[in-house]
Length: 183
Ligand SMILES: [Zn+2]
Ligand SMILES: [Zn+2]
Image 1 (tube, rainbow, N blue to C red):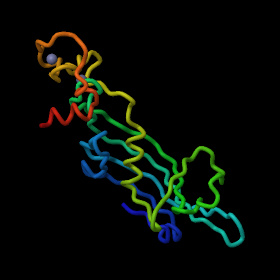
Image 2 (image 1 turned 90 degrees about the vertical axis):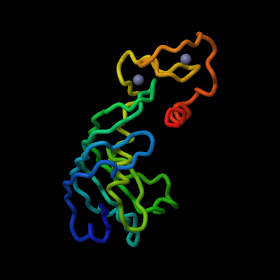
Image 3 (image 1 turned 45 degrees about the horizontal axis):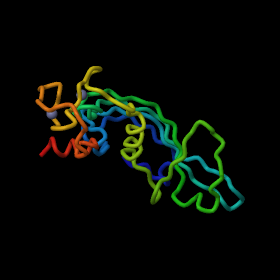
Image 4 (image 1 turned 30 degrees about the vertical axis):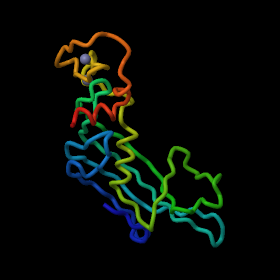
């Protein structure tokens, strides 16, 4: 859903919709597995910076709720988690602050973002809000045994015969683990 500034100038837009699985693309960090419900209101706020300097900000206030899959921090198996959050955001036109980086807005509880080309995509906003709402660390179960640092075996599923010892640097990062498991 796209909010166009010139349409919002006419009247605020209330929205209440469901996005199909995958419509909010969060890359490798999270996969949207269920329908994502989102509702709220978009409106234009005019910042009067001077007699001839009026900036049209978009204020987007609302909430979302949906189910996502994220990789377990230890064994990288997908874990289903529900995510939900409220947001209240201000978007300025890109470039509006290029000459005044220190300018602040009156509502201190809001966060500032920027919109490009006179419109704002709801899906882009939701992607960022979903990523912000992700737990720092998700485990598939509290006692997940993780992957063997030497052979990469999932220790929840099998016992490998590796000796305990210095770990193989190939298993240093989660992304490498994931690639190896998929191939
Ligand atoms: Zn795990
Ligand atoms: Zn092993």
